[in-house]
Length: 282
Image 1 (cartoon, rainbow, N blue to C red):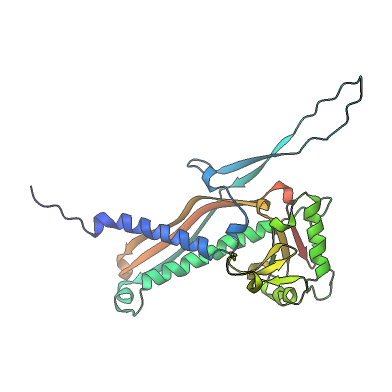
Image 2: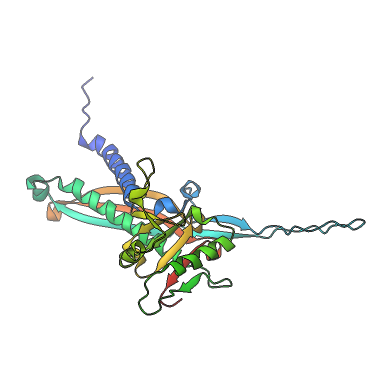
């Protein structure tokens, strides 16, 4: 029996799988907001087009009087639905001559850059949901106290904190997100504690610059002029397919086409009552 040789054809699938795993890990590391919201990817099974997350109200505590019966109560359930409808992709073509003669690892560098851009895309999807605070009573879409310059002030943070506390949410478990234009205003607030003063043993999130009243403050250009406050349970996301890397020869161009894509869903939860947005116009 002749020897069987295992070459590139037999190992390419395994190589691409390893690259895909690397790209997904890199995406998670580069994303600033994925660790701050709820991940339901374990529920995004094959064949599902959406995920339903049941939620309900609570009971009203009453008193029992002697000789009188107590009325039973019911709990009404509703569901938040995460539609798995976000199929996002980046593709690029690399000519063979470029990959052979370049001084850097062109393919590896391009995949890392594409993974970083996909991470920014995931953050943008999360921010879009964080800005969908409830407009019903009590209104979680409020206006800056400084209506002229839209500079965030301590009074704005206290207003958002109260709205979260009124929903029985511990503000110390919450996050605050500001754009790059608001960062200088945050640093000027006396109650702000810089992350440099945390101590060496405390983990710091990507983009985290400090805390105010226990809330971790994250700077992300995607927030723009708005500022958002949220609990981890305010937004849910699910990856039905993590980052996948595929390649295909393009003989017409003597090149290889690379494709990175993911399939996921993002949804604001609990009717937008677990997040607050402050904007120029509420």
